[in-house]
Amino acid sequence: MSAPAARASGQVQVEYHAFHLADAGEYTQPPFQPDNGLIFSRPGLAVVLAGVNSGPVDVTVEIYRRAVPLPDHAEVWDEVVEHSIEFLTGDMRVTAMMDALPELPVLTPFGPGPYRARVHARGRDRAHDAHVADPVEVFLLQVWPRQRDPDLIHQHNDRYEQSMRQSVQAQPQQVASPEPAEEDWRRAASERLHRRGT
Image (cartoon, rainbow, N blue to C red; front, side, top):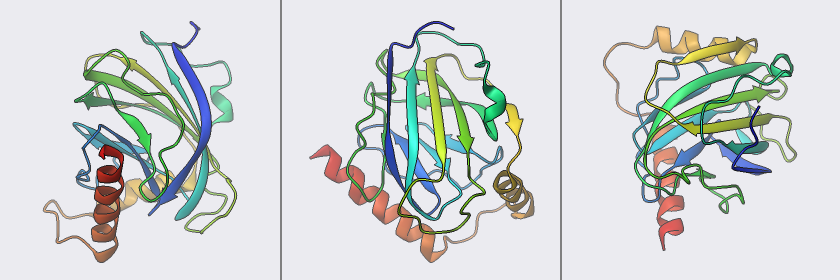
């Protein structure tokens, strides 16, 4: 595997089972459609789903110039999904909604456009729906420029992913009015990203 152009690890604060990959100034949540159980997006913003309701998770980011093969240790992950994201700026970052911006690399050092994100997750069943003070989940994000492609699922093993997919299948076609928790999520994301832009 070629060496990444940038790599770093840190803790990211999860709220409402999620953290974001967000362009500067983008804060409108996409429709809640976690078809692959791990990540969904709209242009400018992606949502990564965690098992914990709130608390820190460990995140490693690796940025590549081109597609990279699956690592030899892919089997150590519960979930591995590739997802295409349209980045609108050269300043998309991992974003914590209600905490300081994590010290992780910019995801789009090669400018705006379509990118591919391979998201690895481990431990999402360990403290499902809990509020944690210490990380029990680990994520690896591998990102590179690439034209838009359908999602590619390499690994699906955790129970949380299954519950997410079942909830999508049970949803009616038309989106109902947002629940209060979703409104809180949108408001928190808006406030967090507006603070980042100032």
